Length: 299
Image (cartoon, rainbow, N blue to C red; front, side, top):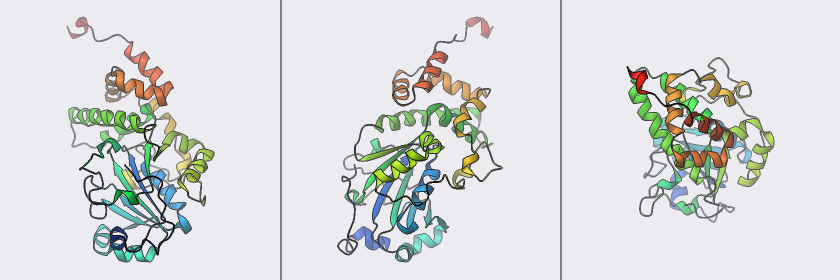
């Protein structure tokens, strides 16, 4: 995967690297993030940007896998401010020069697993992966993540319930793959959204591990990416979000119930959840032990 914990301490020494010439600056740190949708990706990435050197950061959001990230981003932020996609595609070096050498470079992938990084088929296309300082893996407790995914999909009225179920089941399968990577690769820094949102010490420790000086350890405002919170549309303050209660808020939802019923009966998924979220696994085990649908119920 990434080429160890490489830090580009001397911008002048690395100025001729082709990637940095295309970018317009030499990053002081290059982070590549993986995470499922509705896992707090943008809240965490926004926080990383606020803690970039002198607050200087370029964020290439939701890049398409197998392609060069400088050509395959869905959107761009510079110093936390959105840059129009059209301007970014035609003027990325100019934007980079305005940031200056030593700024933070963030590249993100959604619904993509590090396991997709295969020999001859690198996730970031022909981008030189040895330039990546660290990979980041953002993940969230299963019950709350599945609740948020279900809630978000229900706002898409063009999807039938069968299609929503299909999307959710594919996402659950990939979620399990991501969990398997959490303790697998020492070059990857895992960030648990639940712990990040609840514990400022966890946030501070994570910044230290990534080599970033703490500048703003708050949760910040709710990001606008993905439509913000699916549950609390009337607040802009991340500190007011009850993200640890999403599963309770969705318990009466039939689609959510079915997702839990199916997930609870997948031994491999359950084992991965239990290794990181034993309380979630205990609830799923209770669900799996419940009564299945009887023939009498169908008559």
